[in-house]
Length: 167
Image 1: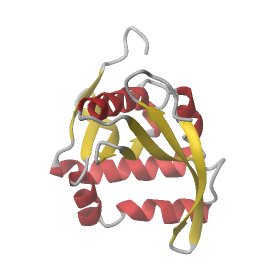
Image 2: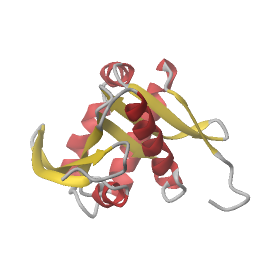
Image 3: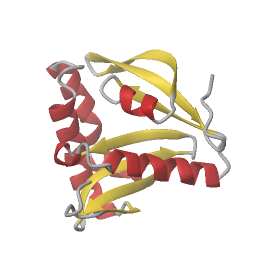
């Protein structure tokens, strides 16, 4: 981040955040994943956020953190049962500015503090490299049905505490 760039802050998600978090998810899927997924897959993927009541309930059932810049949400992460990253999305305008790193570090720290020995995620093909750079090790390849489409993901896992990878 450059010296003049506004700082990224973290806060818990609030019920009123649901529409903007859904918009971040949609923008990230449509603008960042086209090299790895076709338009039918992207359309099926964003369906998870189309029903804002269901999406809001999903976020509320998890420890959801929001990254903000100048008070505006630019990304979010949802931690399920202190064991799995369920959702991690950054607005395309904020990619490459440390937002995902900050969110992921916070989730790892919280999961460890709450007794988890490892943290997993089902990483999209687009996000796989990000997770691997953070020490997550691929465990298995998945084919996830979403409506009429199928998405390829990879389950990755990282040991917390000593920083060693899960083999």
